Figure (cartoon, rainbow, N blue to C red):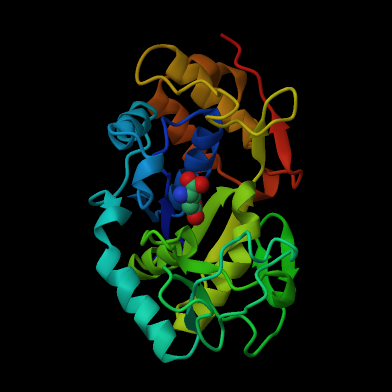
Length: 299
Ligand code: GLU
């Protein structure tokens, strides 16, 4: 078994609803990538946006992961409890001159593709509620990183804009929360769905600004319906089961979606046997760098 010293991975679902097949593929890919090298795998519930998170959804996710044998290390981490860490990082960015309050509304700048930075040198409408943004116009350079599947990535900072770190309603924004938590948990490898690739440049900018280490990134092909739509709550993707025979079959299908070519005999095997095979055979080089995998529930 190859060993990557100190590998620390994570699965970081937003509990906006139960997990579906697409989330299973992302969870399984990150789990296998960690376990194949004897690494740690953590679970972080990204519940920073309470109106989007129905009560009980996080517990459902925990039960679903358990049913699929995806056992995490240590305690579950909840973003709703990390406000102090986000506030400390925002303060640091402000002290560095890299974060500023902004009173502008989307309506005011709708003629522009990205926020034009009007509040960079002082809030425009003093007294109005403010969001906080990252100042991206200082030290501009291409934001680049290497994705383990999709290769070299490069984004022009001028197309990124000043990303929101804290919203006007006081809620923390995903980009800041995810970067702070990945750093606090010493995450070395981020493995997640391709829908998040576009977010990575802001996360790289924030890591640089805050002096955090750059994790390695692997974005996984997205699972789409046979009509080509991303599986999601909006497209009525069925929730993963918490027990029963369907668990084995869906786990097998997830291994196929990850291009791991599991042998047919494994299809009816227990969750433990499937995972054991998958951990010892996990190979990123088997993954095709095509952006999506159509999938249809077979039962
Ligand atoms: N919470 C994000 C989501 O569920 C994922 C965050 C991440 O993996 O970086 O889409």
